[in-house]
Length: 308
Image (cartoon, rainbow, N blue to C red; front, top):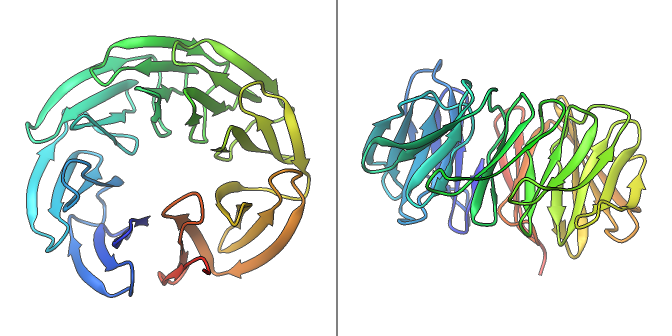
């Protein structure tokens, strides 16, 4: 599910894409793009034309008119995509299972460039300042400019199963090597925090503070610039998905049951805990005081807006 100011876009596992009016939930259109066995990796709104939607499968990009679902373009990738694409300077940039970060030039239907490492890219690429960064399963960390030029490289001692995040020109990685890492764009280690277990939950960063779930310890807040531990909420797990009225929103998920926890960002104290049975995912259209979109295990989509 992907939310913008005027529309909400949802894609089912069967490949059906549906666009809803954000204000009312009314269906604008729904379209079956491919067969149920086709793997899709991401949905993007075209930055150069907000009336176009880019739906990416692992092998091609479908460019759709956001108003009427018209198929504007269909372009095949030179290599199978394995991650959600980033849209950079008119290019779709994604990681592949053969260890390559590749850029597809949208509208020209050609491969713009590729950069190969030794391991598969299974997690999202991340914008870090004016560069794009990726972490391979071999532990290779690379920083590339939008034209494919390598500007930084680093190495961690294992792969990743959680998407990295970035803030203020720093890449943060929660690794399977039992460490939290921070790198600058040149690949220089800013700090490293060792943990007793492998890290598998996606971290989040807000206003210079990094939040990482450390199994057995709880949700931990780090000072992004130094790696200093600010606090640990021992009874909170999951990912920080946003903030409401200055308080952190943490989503804890277990099967078809989710819990939304409100935390004090200064001390990590739990302010409220709300059980959400049947909810399988929650996304927000803005980190700060955004609208929340919840999806149930019966494919029901609900919107929650902040009170004025």
